[in-house]
Amino acid sequence: QVQVLETGGGLVQAGGSLRLSCTVSGLTFHAIPVGWYRQAPGKEREGVACIAFDGGSTYYADSMKARFTISRDDGKKTLYLEMTDLKPEDTATYSCAASAIFRGACPPERTGFPSSEFRSRGQGTQVTVSS
Image (cartoon, rainbow, N blue to C red; front, top):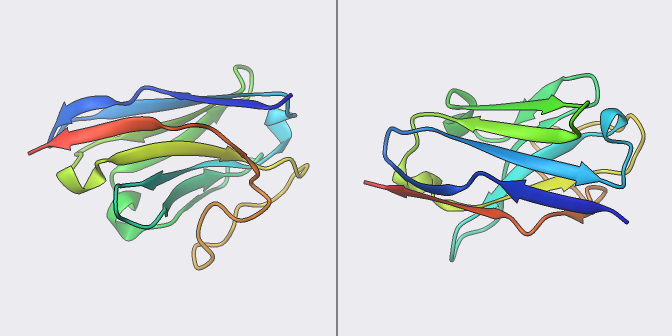
């Protein structure tokens, strides 16, 4: 049974930092692509970043490229998102998604994230940035 669990959200002031974690079980974590997306109330889902099995990463919005860093620890089966210089517009529920495709690729930036093969998704963790 696949389980995806995000942690690390919270309330932070503008300019602050947070590190989100996502633990994935039930999949061959070291060989699959995994990533983050977010959704704010009343807004469309937005891809944040994806990281492939070989560590190659893709970011899906210029506004986040300079401030967010995605990484993975295969030994811990955990995905991370380091967020710095947070802004009120970053307020959203951040969720993790994993693909079961062995050595699969991250979707290209123009496609967005997650694509349909990223079927394993968590409930998300809330990030609130106050001004």
